[in-house]
Image 1 (cartoon, one colour):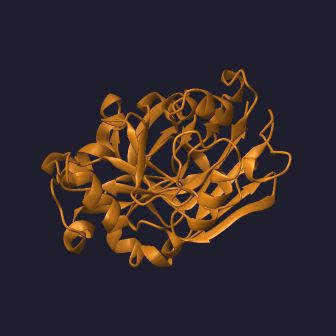
Image 2 (cartoon, rainbow, N blue to C red):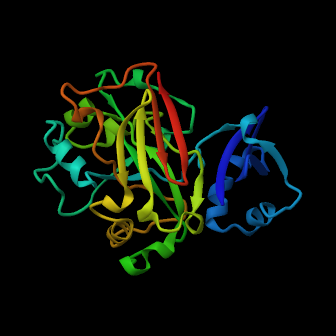
Length: 289
């Protein structure tokens, strides 16, 4: 199942994708939190989504929002989690947070809930007064079961599904503050979507491939299998000391090919279009404003 939140006409709705149609399961104010309620296993929500007579609208007639427009908590993110990107970032002069080229343990930070936006939303690059906006296409993992101290062997049992994320970043702010929250938590700097695909639909997550394009030029291409710390390791590491909740999102890191990897850096400008595609998870496209 592919879960979505969207606008159709003057109405906010939530539901799922069925072929070329959006199936409307929840409307009104509850729609903004309906996908989260579904993930949490709310019986009333799931029953409503199984209504065979649910209204359908063509996908071409809707405007997609982030699948969870108002996440419960900040998005958990992983830095330097592909070997080639770890080397790229370490050698860029912007990695002020660590002395290791390849991390010996996962590097975890967060992006504010207010940074989340959906497909087609204009990313407010103008909020970065340093003019150093960069892109980072990433796989997002959505937790489906409350978990604490979970082992790698059982970690995937706690995954609800997967989603495409663009961890947009101000490189100068990331560097200046010696940590990554300010440079990455800017409003609209976390596009997510177009949908959350359930784990059973995705199958082997390591087989997924990520491609990022800027203005039609391919910049990133990598398999999820190339992660330094795979999805089970990330869940085991994070849940060892804190409880992960249904609806939590983990952005697993970006591969080589980001803007600061070029000489000189290829920062994003107003009007540039970012396009991140992951196998089975659709395409997330946003413009810089």
